[in-house]
Length: 267
Image (cartoon, rainbow, N blue to C red; front, side, top):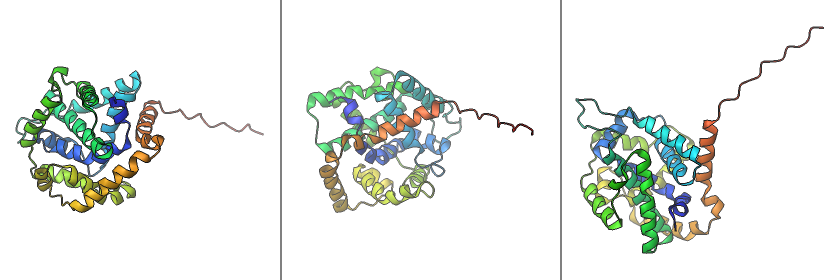
């Protein structure tokens, strides 16, 4: 099963909160987001941009890939700490690019296994190798991606031990998890999103982010998801990918010029 099959599943959206919170808990990423992003104004922006970026890399045309990669890299270019920042960061740092790609891979595989069961080893290894494209598109050297899943697991466990949630990162997470703006459907869905995110996070991070977890309810939600979601029509399950790429195409079209109003002939 190639990456294109796994990445097409809408259920991966359920892991969006987990991936973002894992990214933020790396102090360099967390402070970069705190300094240069505004979740309060647009709580969906980071998730939407990340999804479109990944969809373009895996399913897009050459033009879509180039456009989205250029947009992301242009957005990252000014993201650098000043000399007296408490935490130093640079969005061009390959180690941070590796961490972001790692959170997307680990979260996608976690959601996939909870919903469909684990992949056979050969397929799982092939998918893992393909996921390096997320990091390399950001500028990460290909050799930085751990050689295989065993090496990745060692890298992952080491990185998780170094994650920290300070007051600034906690404040950003509050804007994400308890949005005061955005569409009504988003705010209505947040209790369920917080439950799933809490259940997917490592226990230490869940506590650090002050996320309560009703374990019985979480287990029930995931159990019913595994029963119902695989039976949904494939077209419905792939809707986010089609929608994201269509939106990318629309955003790249030049605005149509309005024709000047016609003058009525004088009688």
